[in-house]
Structures are given as structure tokens and as C-alpha cells.
Image (cartoon, rainbow, N blue to C red; front, side, top):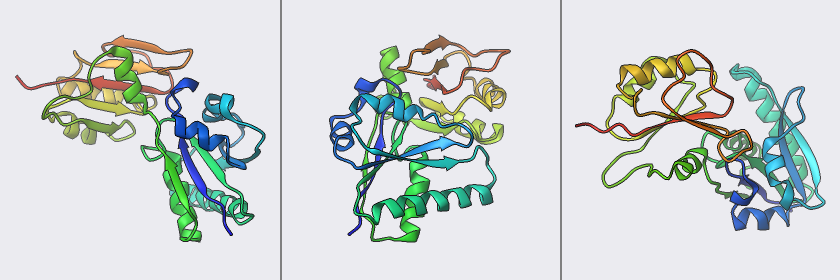
Length: 233
């Protein structure tokens, strides 16, 4: 009998932002499936959850730093096979991810690949606090109110795609704002959102920084998001 695959969101960075359910599952699973980048065995999600992790087996899953679809597909298939091999022993396994497991998360790809190998495997998702929720809380400013629509954008999109979304009325969040910052900055300016934007980096982590306005020349720190509250009129 197969074990259960758990996708656990550990939140944005502070260990005390894990949910009670996440802590409970972490204390009961047999194996941790730890995503690591090739050549780097550090997992930030693991470090965040470390206070709640007992004596479990650690199975690292290697994910390359690339956008090449063929390479990524092979990596996900390999990771899924490793995961299924663990679950086939009747062991329960947890995959830890920053923020929420189903919001721009690596877990969604693993889940899909595992289901492709064996759709009968039980999968359970434990939601986590997202970085933009944590950033809004740190600023003590609401994300959206009344009939507003919250726009959540991926910062890896091109400038034109970002601009089309940012020209809509209402609050917006741009995630993954690190590598593509110049294009994001240009789209924010073109949409008239550059004056009300807040840049938040490493929220709820030791190196956290919050600043109003855009960085005109430099590149923001890793794990940066942008919040904008533009309203017409």
C-alpha cells in the first residue's frame, strides 16, 4: 500500500508562520522530499521548518536552474520516480515549499508528474502563507477591499504582458521580481504605478527590507516582490 504525498507550504520565512496543520504533518511523516538546486544542497524551506522536523529520512530531489522545457521535464520525471519509490514502501512523504504549495510553486510540477506515473497515489496539500500576504501584513495595509480585483503577476513575464495586466484598475502584486526587474520597472512606469509601489525583499526573514518606490539603477535582492495599490480617479 502506497503512502501519502504531502505538499506543505512553510510560509514566507519565519518558522512561527507555519500553520498548526503543517506542524502536525511534519511530526508524523516518514520522509522529507527536499528540493535542491544542482550543485547546492541548501533548502531554505527545510531550514524554516527545521524546528518542527523530527527524525526523518531526507531524500533530496535535484532541480536544475534552467527554463529549458526538455531538461525540466526530465528533472520532474526523475523526481517523481524517486518520490513514488518512497511512497511504494508505504511511507508518508512531505515536499516542503516556500509560501503556498499551489501558488507559483515547484510542488505543482511534482504533483502532476507523480499523478502521471500513478494516478491512484494519495496527495494532500497543506496551504501556506504567501509572501504577498506577509508583506501586506508587515506594511499594515490591506491587499484589496470592497469590489477591487487583486492582480497577481509573475515577474518573469515580458514587459508587454506585464503592462497589459498593470493597466487594469485595482491593486497588483508582482512576484519573482529579481531577474526581470528592468522590464518590471518599465511596465510599472508605463502604467502609472511607479509612484505608489512598495518593494519588499526577503519578507519575514533576517535580511528583510521594505522600501517605497522603485530602485532606478540597481537590481533588487533575491526573493523580491512589488505591491501596487493603483486606483482610478
